[in-house]
Length: 81
Image 1 (tube, rainbow, N blue to C red):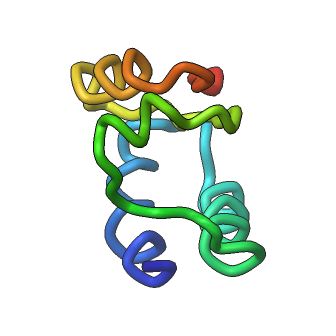
Image 2 (image 1 turned 30 degrees about the horizontal axis):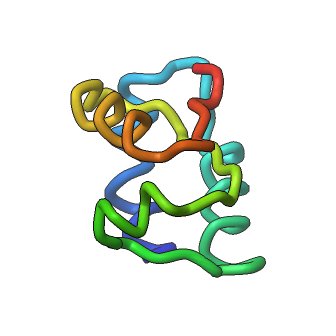
């Protein structure tokens, strides 16, 4: 997933977010996938609603998905753009 993030996701993100650079994205991917890769890709809505761990969500260009995600998770906050 690290390589896919670097080779596929990052170029697409950087094309829409000129304030970011590859070093920042690389650091994010490193922290996400290599430092402490303790996460899941998919959980039920019931589990998501019961989760009490505070978390941050990176903004993206899929606003309806992000809005729905933030409404499900009780202690989730969007990071500043």
